[in-house]
Amino acid sequence: MLRLQSSQLDFARAFARLVRDRRESGEDVAHQVTRIIDDVRGRGDAALVEYTARYDDHSLGDVDEWTISPDQCRAAFDDLKPELRAALELAAQRIAAYHEAQLPQDRDYTDEAGVRLGARWSAVDAAGLYVPGGRAAYPSSLLMNAIPAKVAGVERLVVVTPSPGGKTNPLVLAAAHLAGVDEIWRIGGAQAVAALAYGTSRIRPVDVVTGPGNAWVAEAKRQLFGVVGIDMVAGPSEILVIADGQNDADWIAADLLSQAEHDPLAQSILITDDPVLADTVADRIGVELAMLPSARVASESWNTHGVIIEVASLDEAPALANALAAEHVEIATADPEALFAQIKHAGSVFLGRYTPEAVGDYVAGPNHVLPTGRRARFSSGLSVLDFMKRTSFIQMDEAALRAIGPAAIALAEAEGLPAHARSIEARLGI
Image (cartoon, one colour):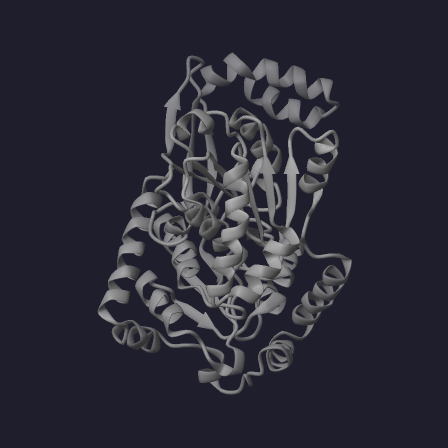
C-alpha cells in the first residue's frame, strides 16, 4: 500500500506516476484476442466449441448445452428465497425508473428561414450483453445492462455468459427472467464478443455489445468497435474516498475493500486531511481483511494498488480527484456538496457518510457500468443512449432553399466540389 503526503517535496512526481498507472492488458493479450476474433470469424461455431471446452471445461453439443431456455430462467426466479426475489425486484424497479427518465426527446421545428429541422431517436434492433461468470457471477450486472436496453426499446436482447463446468449461477438466470432477456448463450471470453459481432451459424449478430468482463473481453470490445457499437472499454474497478476526520474508520475501510475484492488489479484510494484517520483506516483494513472471505483477492489489490493520500486541507481533494477521474468517488464529509461542485471527472459520485458505493452497485438506480482507467474524463456510465441512435432530418420548400442555398453553393465551390454546388443550382434555376 502506498502512502503519500501532499506536503512531500516529491509529491507531484509520485502522484503523476499514480495517475499514469494503467493496470490494464498489454500487447500479449491484444495479440491473443486478435487471433481469437479471426478464428471465430473464420470458423464460427467450431471455434466456439473449441474455446469453450478449453477455457470453460464445457462441451457444446446439443441445443441444451449451447443455450439456456426461458423456462429455466423462470424456474430459477421462482426458486429464489422470497427476500432475495424481493431484492432483485426492487433493484429492477429502481434501475428502470432511473433509466426511463433518461429517454431523449425527439425534435421537430421550423426555423426563421422556413427550414424544417429535427431529430428522431430510435433503438438498435439487437443488443448483446456480456455477463461475467468466472471469478464471480453478477446478476446485478445483467440487470444494469438489460434494463436500459429494454427501456430504450431494443427488440432482441442476447446474453452471453461463460458456464464453467457447464454450471450457470441461478441468480443470473433469475435476473434474466426478470429483465426479459430473449436469448442466453453459454459462451464467454473474447470468442463470445466476436460471435456477437460477426454472428455464426447458430448465433445471429447484434448491433451493440455492452457489459463488463476480464482483460480479454475488454480487448475484444476495443478491437471490434466499428463492427459493433460498444458501451466502453472497461478496466479494473476503482474507488476514491474523500473523507474528513469525523468518519468511522471501519466504514471507510469497508468502502475501500468493497472494490478491492473485485479483482487483484482493482484500486482503492483514500484522500483525507486527518493523519489519525489515515493511520486508523490502514490498521482497520488489516482487521477487515482477516475476517473477509474474499481476503485473498482484496489483500492483493490493497497491498499492490491501494493508496492513502494525506492532504493539508480537503480543498486540495477536487484537483486530485479530477486528475484521477476515478470510476467511483465517495465524498464522506459534513458538507459533500461543496466538494462535489468542484468534481468534473468521475464515473459516479456518492455523497455523504451514509452513501456507500456498494449501494450503487445494486439498488440505487443509476448504472454501475462506469468508465475506468481515467476514461471518466471523456465518457459516461452506461445509459439508454448506448442502445439508441439519433437520426436528423431536414425539409425545405423552394423559398427556404432560396434563403440558404446560395451560401451552400459558395461553400461547395470553395471546397472544389462542383457537383455539390450544381445539385443546389439546378433547383434554383441558376
